[in-house]
Image (cartoon, rainbow, N blue to C red; front, side, top):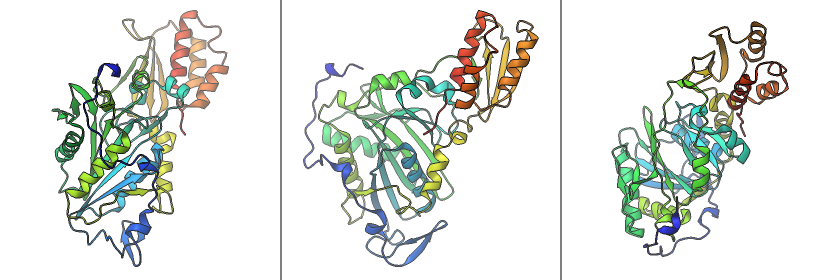
Length: 391
C-alpha cells in the first residue's frame, strides 16, 4: 500500500484529545455507587448517577485503557454476559498491540503464517463471533456495539460510522453487500457479530494507520496441504484511512465516534468513560481472560482437518488427521515409506498436541536422519504445524 500518492483533503477535528486513551475513569466509581443489584451471576453496585436499569434509551461509551488482546476480548465478553441492554446501548472501543484475531470457526493453520507470527512476537487469538481473520495493531480501532437482541441492527451501526467520519473528514465511505466499509473500492473495515437470547453485539475494525506490510506478511499462510471445512476468510484489498487523510488518528476517531454516539441518544452524560479491564472493576474477568488466552481455545477449538503429504499434483503418501489440535491418526497410503520409519513416525506423532513440546521432539528426533532427502519437506511441514504459541 503506497500511501504517499494520496493527498490529504480532510479538515482537523476541533477539540480532539491528543492523549485521549491515557485518561482514567474507573467503571464502578463512575457508574455504580451504593446498593447492590445482580447482573448475571455477579453482585454489583448500581445505585447512583447512571443506573443501567433506569437509563431508558441511553447510549454509553467505554474506551479500554488496555492494549492487550486477551484483556479486551475478555472485557467484551464480560459486558455481553453481564449487562442488561434492554433499555440502553453501549459502544466499546479498543485497540491492541500487534496480534491476529481469527473467527470462532476458523483454522489458524490455513489463515495465518504462524512461523512469522512467532518470529515477530505477534499474538494469536480466537474471538467468540464468526467471520474472518483480521490483523490488529495500535493503528487499528475496534468498535463493539452492544444492544438487546431485539434492537440489534448491524447496518445502522455501520451507517453511524460512515456518517460521523464523513461529517468530520469528508471521507466518502460506503457499505458493501458483505457489510464491509469501503473507501475507493478498498476495504477499511470488516465486521462480525454474536447474537444471544437477550443480548447481542456487532463489532468491526477500522484500519486507520495499520502496518500494512506486517498485515500482508502475517495473513499470508504457508501452503502445507491442509483440507478442512472451517470458515475461510474472504481476502480483499485494504486501505488505511490515513492514506487518504493524513491528519486522522485513532484518538481523534475515538473522540468523534464517541461524541456522535452519545448525542444520538437521550443520555445526559457527555463523557467518554475510560475503563481498565481488571478484576477489581469487572469481577470474574480474569477467568475470561484465561479462557481466551489458552492453547485449547486458540488452537484446540479448530474444526478437524487433514494434512496430505506431499500436496499438490502428487498422490498423497501420508495423511495426518487432526482433531482439537491433536494428531488423531496417521494413514500411510502406499509403500513408499519404509515400515520401520512409519512405525517411528507414528510413535513420534500419534495423539500429540501440535505445540512447542512436539516441535522440540521433532527437532531432536533421529527418525528423519536416515530417511530419504525427499522426506526433509515432511519434517518442515510438521514443524510448521507445531509453530503454535500462546501468551
